[in-house]
Image (cartoon, rainbow, N blue to C red; front, top):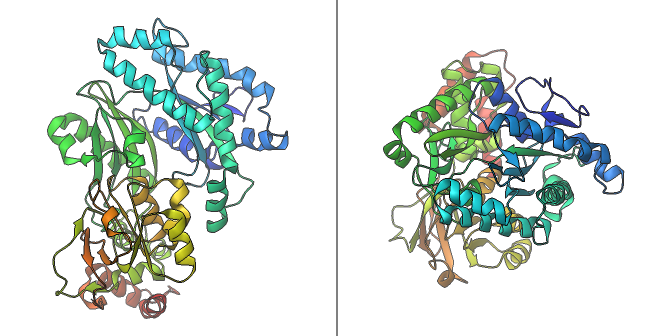
Length: 492
């Protein structure tokens, strides 16, 4: 174990032996991948104990922790051959939050930290691409100001200190507190702060960023599913500000990288015994994995994946049954649209399956108010961010003009089981305000008016048939499919 003021600062070298509660989910996944020999940029973590101490000490960063940070940074410098704050061979870092329990999009991150005038010039000279250097500088300044609240200082170490404090403070942000309250997540856990060497998806045509699910989180298909954005950084895909390409495009552009990615994904799924959500970056043709976590899925996908993993021998029957809840069965019995539905008035990418009708509302606060008053509301936005989550949780469905199936709107709606269609096209939704529509999020289509639906049937579904067969022959199980079906229908 490489430890400084253990367990407050740890180098993530695959040997710390620390739990997710100590490292936080993001750092734990880095540690896990390093232990498996998967290519991950080097990193160190300020553990969740630092966050607890920060709030106990009146929101002050413990001095002994800050004094130990340069030693931890020295480890990144030795591994990368670069130096933080130096213009000769500059090292830039990301500063990321990471609670023990995943809270997608709720807390803060700063990328490309360590940027100065001299570093920008050095990046331009070393890469031969002044546009890349300027783009990296712009990304850093915009994100730093948004997260920290001030323009970045010239001193990289002061940038790091301010970003670290901002990440710690994001644990108590309004949206994070509301998220934990709504999901019963304990308040006392705190977030870790992971500092990781940057790799650059915006560096040239052989670079990019993406998200890969080891199985489809929308439909439950066993096939890998993901998106890829050439010359982008991770926040571009997750935020939904950019329309990413299907993962198949990466297979065409860089088949070797694509093959390596799928091999790593299979290894991580087998090690985790569950479907994984993986963030990756390609820098000049070299693959780096940044994070892996258990995937957020639609209820339909959760059931199908539990059945698949049992059939493949990755989990046993008891574990498969433990992962299946009434709302998962209900999703497979979800009503479907009648054939007489006309032509769609808008279309996008399916992000969370389901059918819903309601009135289109463009403003999140208005949608929240009207939904609480009992109206069936469809929230339509250019793209969503964490401040929209309360309205999203109350809406019958969510539509966005931008973003892909791994964007903020998609991930959050899948977790909540809210039908969602993303990437409908710039300017396509504003004209729907105040109109009653029906959203078929399984197909990614939007229709005029309220359309009748028909009931689903368990007789026609292979996963439900397999589940029924297991339960009939498993006399030790306390769970029975008829009871699941009855409880599922009560949810409808």
